[in-house]
Image (tube, rainbow, N blue to C red; front, side, top):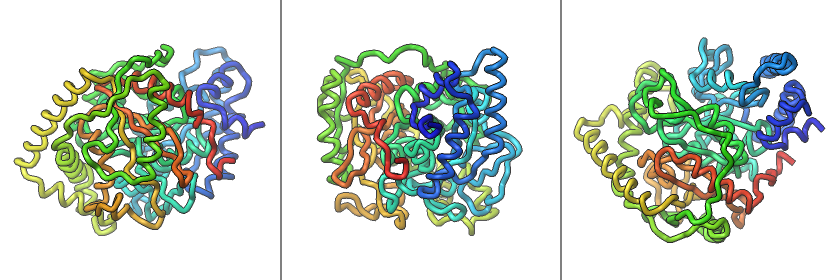
Length: 470
C-alpha cells in the first residue's frame, strides 16, 4: 500500500496529506523505501538524507495536528539537483574536487522550497559542473535511462528526470542553460519547464544580470509542474532579474486551448533530426489538432542563435568556473576546461556582436508571437545514446563538431529567452520516449502548461511506468 502512494501524482499526494489519508511520515517512508529498491538500477539519487527527511516529516505531521496553515508543498518529498547547495548535506557539483564538500548555507531555491513545505530526501546526479547533456561524473558514475538502462539519461538534470520517471520522488528541481530542463525529461518520459529568465529567482550567481541560465520545475504532469512552479516563482532580493516576476497562480484552472495557433517546425531551422525522432513527432502531430489547436508549418528566423548561445555559454563558464580552473583545472573534464578557455579568449567585439544578435533575435520572436501562440518543435535531435559515449558524434549522418552542437534544438530556444516546456507525446520504434517542445512568448508559462495538460489528457503517458519502476 505504501508503494502505491508513490504512484500518485504530486497533486494527489498533497491532497492525501491535507485530508489525513496518509501522514507525511508514511509518504516519506514510502519514497525512501522505493529509492532503496530502485535507485541501484539507475543511479539517479546519489546522496540520500533519510534521517533528516523523516525528522522533517514528523515536524510536518505535528504542524497539521496543531491545525496550522499548511504551506503549498506540505510534506511532499523532493530531490535537489547536486548543483544546488544544501546546508549540512554533501554537494559535489559532480566534481571529484568536491567529493566530500558540505555547504554551510542553502541555495536560494532550496531555501524557498523548504519554506514551502517540501522535504528533501536526497540529491540528484548531474554531469561535472552541469556541463553537457549526459549525466556522468567521476564521483558517482553515470545515471541510466529508465527505459533502457544501457543508454544515457541526458543532462544536466538527468538524475532528476530519472528519479521522477521511476516514482522515487513526485517533484524535482532542475536548471537549464542549453536544455537541461528539457532534454532529460524528454528522454525519461516526464515534463520539464524552462521558465522565462527572472520568473524563478536563483542564486548565488557570479553573473546575476546575465539571463541565459535559469532554474525551474520538473514533474510527471502539468498540474504537478504548476504546483512546483508556484512554490519556486516570485521576486527575491537576491536575484535582480526577478524584479519583473510575480507569484505564479496555481489556483486558476487550466483554460481550454481550442483555437490557439501553433507553428510547427520539424527541424527548427534545418537542424539534423534522427529518423526515429522525426517519425514519432510526425505521428504525434494529430494530438495538437485533436486538442483544438490550429496548426501551421512555420518557424521563426533564428539566425545568429547559435552564436548568441555559444558566446554567452563560454562567457558564463569563464565567469563562473575561472577560479576553479586556476586552482584545480587539471582535475576538470576536458570539455569544461575548453569552455573556460574559450570564454577567456572572448573579445569585447565578440560579446558586443552576440549582444546585438540577441536583441535582433528577441525582436523577431516578438513579431513571430504576434501571429502564433506557440512554436512546436523537437526537444531532442537524437534518441538516447549508449551510456559509454560522452556525446553523439553524428546526428542523422551529420558530424557534430562539439559536445553541445547536438543540443541545438534546445540551445536555439535558450538564446531567444522565451519559456519552453518538454512534453512526452509518444514512444519511438525502439520503445523510447520522445518529447515535443512547446515555446511561448515571455511570461506565458501558464499557456504552456495548459497546452501540456491538453496533450497529456490525450496521450495518458503519465501513467506509463519504465521497467525499473514496475
